[in-house]
Length: 135
Image 1 (cartoon, rainbow, N blue to C red):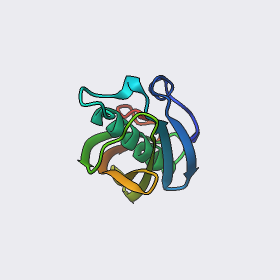
Image 2 (cartoon, rainbow, N blue to C red; image 1 turned 45 degrees about the horizontal axis):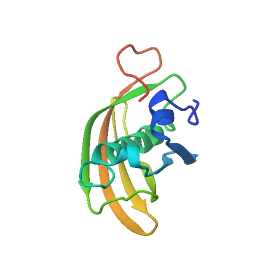
Image 3 (spheres, one colour; image 1 turned 120 degrees about the vertical axis):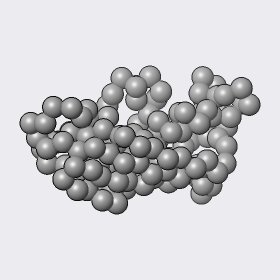
């Protein structure tokens, strides 16, 4: 299972995987002007994408080879804002992996400052299944 595989979305946004091991993935992104909202801070959608990607990669790391998954529920709690030049780090951890569903959590930080927390639920398909995608 290639946990270090990137996606076109990751490349577009400038997201990188900083760490990956079984049940955990750490993603990073540097906040730049193109990622700001009208208030001059990083758009929450990009923070959500970073968190979802970290949790999805963590979930992928516990699936059997050929297993697939898709996020079907994402809950974000935004705590503080991110400004241009800040490096944002999302750590996704698997909380539960069942036969059909999985749950993960994520902490998004900028240095020591908590930016957001997240949880996600995933549908899981065994190898050879036909409806879920990798992320």
